[in-house]
Amino acid sequence: MSKKTMTLTDNATGRTAELPVHKGTAGPEVVDITRLYRDMGVFTFDPGFVATGSCRSSITYIDGDAGKLWYRGYPIEQLAEKSNYLEIAYLLLYGDLPVRQELENFENIIRHHTMINETLKSFFDGFHYNAHPMAIMVGVVGSLSAFYHDSIDIHNPRHREISAHRMIAKMPTIAAASYKHNIGEPFIYPRNDLDYCANFLSMMFATPCEPYEPDPIAVKAVNLLFILHADHEQNASTSTVRLAGSSQANPFACIASGIASLWGPAHGGANEAVLDMLRQIGDVSNIDKYILKAKDPDDPFRLMGFGHRVYKNHDPRATIIRQICHEVLENIADTDNPMFELALRLEQVALEDEYFVERKLYPNVDFYSGIIYQALNIPATMFTVMFAIARTVGWVAHWMEMMDDPDQRIGRPRQIYTGAPQRDYVPLDKR
Image 1 (cartoon, rainbow, N blue to C red):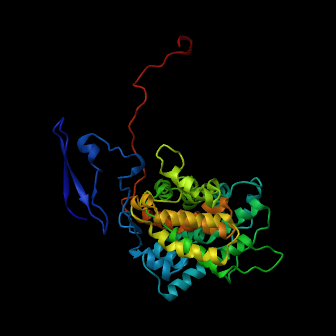
Image 2 (image 1 turned 30 degrees about the vertical axis):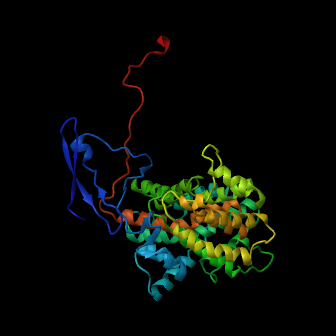
Image 3 (image 1 turned 90 degrees about the vertical axis):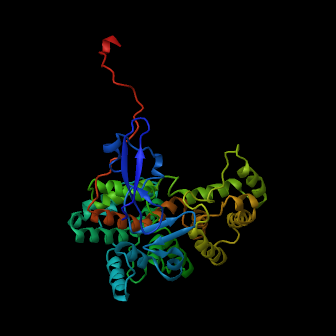
């Protein structure tokens, strides 16, 4: 960290504060305001924390202006092309790419943690038959500390590691069971002969009635989507996990809080909103009309899945996922489904229309992921669940990093109080 400082002066009182300025490996400099209240008697106000660094982290870096996304320093483009999800999981957890033996050991650990306690099956039965899978996920994941309480001492590094492995391994099993409960089919046990993504598809779509082998293109698509969604810096759900963890809550409760945060349509539900938009447009013949509506600032209609709050140029994940989206549509999808034709035509218009090009409103990862999941026959209610499976490793990586941080403190944001001034209580008979 540099010893550069910034001097802040209150013109009204003349009081000054010397604020340290820190510089990370990449990204803008950060002003340390830890002592601001002590020295100046004021707090900062930053709704949504859009200009606030809440922690130090070495896991993920985003440059929204340049369209960069790194995991542990590795560009997402290289990882998506050459790696697989469990190798990415190892990288995010431990900081470096594994050698062959390390990866084999890690894969073996995850493979043999995929089963869930049999008693949990009766817990699923307690949910209404048509409960939303994300509601089930929040409840079941939060309950895991009641089943795996042998290793939830958050001050024990080995316990933290075991809990991390368990969550990465069991999340696909819980997710698939949530889906099976929702549609009334029997749960399918994990298969140790399948890799991570193929095993998930098996638990989703297999039945006891006949053999099931996942389509290789479907496995490839899910693997890529899981890689692209594995982490994304201090987003809402990751920040929620960190905030819950700062109170020293057990790791399963922390991850359940992240799932709850992800459930919001402004976060994990964006790809489902894309399909809702396509249904609203309805037909290719209506595209021009809806493009005009999207350009009209007075019209409430918005094109979902275009542009990104962080990426001001292009979403690097969208560039990667576009190719597999087209591969899935060409080889797996129902070619008679008008929604796919509509999506491809809308993509073409957005990439060529001057209005969208000038404003850099390119299709983002949510646009393509929703289309892919639809083509793989994964229902819309499971889209956010898929996101949760992928993001689990990012959540646990941030949680483990936070627990190792000697400067970690309980999160306690402050506020601007806008309520009534001090007043005296009036007895009921005198009001």
